Image (cartoon, helix red, strand yellow):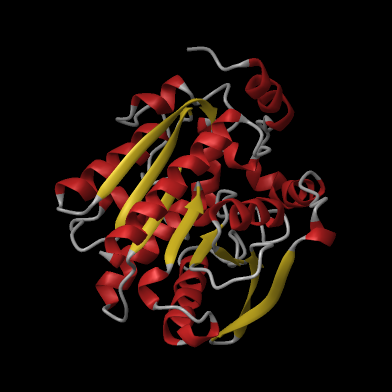
Length: 313
């Protein structure tokens, strides 16, 4: 099915240059901030905070639904290929997410590569979750109500935090929502996943761009085999959170995201996998008026509702 006219218009506006990202990533960071203004800023409720980790502080921004009340928490990790994006460029997305899901959204401004390569960003994300788990009175609700959510590289980080939490044994993550997650280590023509070649040239996120992102993220090639970089390489998929995976039809990451869900399911975890028709990578950044975004949030809200009902029963 072809991409509809609205989505194609958005695609043409968002399509990245194929210049070498190693030479242009700093300019791209500036462009990301310039092209993601938050016009709703005067009208949303938020709180900026910092989490201490070793010799640096991790900024976080907490978004509240407009209506007063006590809400469960989503801990959000933004996308951007581990190299771009921040809590400012994702504020509009998090504002919509808080109001549409009726959850508090805590957005994490983790350190970016290449200045801070793997595992710096992952350790920042883990540290923020650990801080929330150990200080739950701050949000006035139980730990089991905390859910990880991320898109693209942020979904990779959410999956990696869940694996890391299990492996370190400090706390458990009960639920995770992975939006078009990056889960594998090879996005060349040698990839075993057809969507890489089918969608790797004309649909926003290209093969070259994804390869450049990973090259900037890791310190050396050995990191490519690390399951905290590529969760699909994990040897043990057991004891993972209840998981919702949402992929996009015209996304090169589509098949590896769905494959990760199947691996989790085969290991006995509770998993839902949904593919959004006509959608491209990064579609969550579009207006909630787009049908693809509406469908995505309907699936997320149904997942959150089902999980809440099961906890109460």
